[in-house]
Length: 255
Image (cartoon, helix red, strand yellow):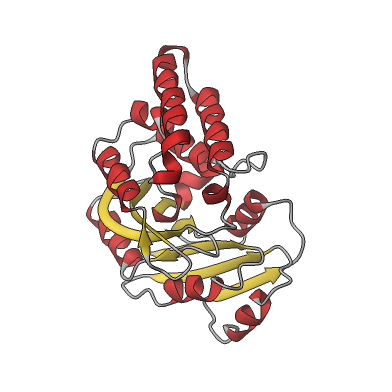
């Protein structure tokens, strides 16, 4: 099995080395390629990338793009792994994450899978533990209806096969916050995922993270994404999603 990991990057020099280390330190019975798609960073990102140029598993480019989704899609097109994922340049994989995914696939092949995801701060300290517990509870009871009602699949801890990607297509370039949720809804409509009840990744909360700093805007786009995917018989699920957004818009800063 070969993993292709895409890392879209822009001015995350404070964190990207930790991201790269978390990927390149993965060990197990698999091959690995890492493609960093940098949008022309002007901080210390490029110096970090140059430091890793001796590692043949890593390739990177830096230049203007049309946004995060465009970078992710181009990375998918430039790789050939059997299982693919994207990990943003401030997030991290947990030790053993890729081997865990490989073992789950070998035990029971899947089109896509996801696991648990910690929340960490700028110093890698775990925060907002209640969010991970909540998402785990939802994940253990996964259904497509439940996914329409709330976005509980953590992007850093999600993987899908090349075959599924070829069937589902590119990440939607028109979406700014909810391109991952849109992709899970597309994948979920086509096949049932495997939930791996292990912590596979860490999502970093900091002042510059999109969904951390602008939660209400992201939640509204996520709701609109659910609306586009819901069929007439699933409108009740949209009502649940709307109520979920309203409640969390009030509670999220305190979680």
